[in-house]
Amino acid sequence: MNSIFTTLLILGAVISAGAMPLQSVTPYPLVPDDAPNADYTVKVNGTPVAACGTAMNVGYAHFAFTGRVKVEITAREAIATFDVSPHRDGIQAKVEGKTLSFELPQPRLLHIQVNKLPRFFLFADAPEAALPQSGVFDLTQYGVKSSTDAVQTAAIQHAIDEVAAKKGVLLVPPGIYRTGELRMKSHLTLHLAAGAVLKGTGSLADHPAGELGTQLIHFMDCENVRIQGRGVIDGQGRALRLSGKNASASRSKLIRSLRARNIVVEDVILRDSGTWGVHLIESDNLRFSGVKLISNTIYDDPTFPWEANTDGFDPDNSSHVLIEKCFISSNDDTIAVKLRHGSRRDMTDIVFRDNVCWSVKSALKIGSEVYEKKLSNVRFENNAVVHADRGIVVYDYSGAEITDSRWVGNHFEFIGGDTKRMNIEIKVQDEEGKGRMQEVLLKDNFFEHAAEKPSRLQGLDAEHEIDNAIIDNLVVAGKKCLSAEDAHIEIRKHVRGVVFK
Image: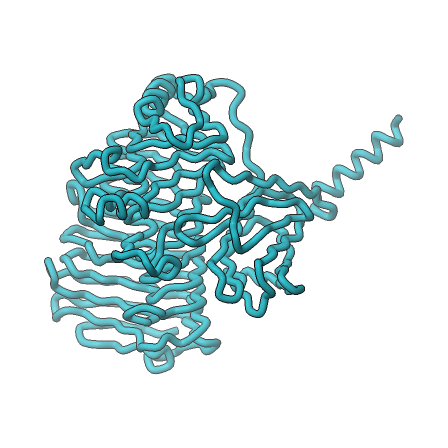
């Protein structure tokens, strides 16, 4: 007995030291009403993982794992070309016929392109933490049932109200729950299980317009709220805009906050917003972590009749916002820091880090709607930009004073494909007010290629300048840039103190 006990102790120590990691794979199911992907199938360590298609003409597979696993993605046709991003993850993939394979030693959020097939995303997460033993209330206890047809807004809202009053966890079990706008309440945890979807109806009747428009999930005048889990929130934004003929009310946000604080959104999949995905207004202490946000784009859906305007995240007149370890695929800006809506005030401490970004427009952006107050301490750190028309962007067009903004350690794979085609554009311009910008740091940024058009720094006049910009270890197409000429940057009027290192 003693020898067996000793052997078990030694084995446990070896595993704990990482020399012999345990392997497990947890495939997450399709949510009801999702069609299997027509272009790809996925296996992880030989275990099938469901791959879904979407109305946005992109697909994804979602699973959790421990240890080191082998991923096999089989396309519907022989693979001639492929790309696995982020490139800086260094994933070594190989092809055999129709199958692309590689190993993952740790969680990753991947963008995959094969031939000219639709884009495909792989969401490989760490295992999910267990729910607490008490204080958990199942949505079905409140008369809500999974249904592809029934609209259950009132019953779901009643469950939210009841569980929030108990400061409990409302569990949304696997199933489809169609709903209009839902208002989050203070002290609620909303947990979406894998295989669960809160799904918009695609009907304007279920989206009453409020003071700032329409949305599916509304954090208004609430605090201490969390949304979590491996389920899905689907805005049906594409269908909503088509049914509403692009009327203002049909351009619904997926999530909006207004005068909220202490909000966490973690791990869930957010998909198919009507316009901006997450709009955060006059709110404080907000954290988005591990979120996968997928919106419609003209790249994937060229027959869509209007400009998609699907930004990813828009922190607006809000402070102490952290967006990290997320995956964002959007037509418009991946993130656009704004200072416009609500009762305007100084805005500070916005951190956007360790995200994977794909956009038709701008990637890491401040502006353009930044009005007369002070905007400080905005940081873009260690993001992987797979695709964007512009990489680092500031449009100070409406009078804000922008100070201490930093872009550090970001990696840009492809820049171009739309109207500007520029690595960097930083401008002060008078559209609705004269702003100024100072203390700009660009450090350790890596662009795989030179953009088609030159970058640009441009102030407005002698009192509204860009002042003190440090560009440190900027690498473009493998070359460290020690001058504006090296970096292909035009330094225009009313820009002072530009230093290359």
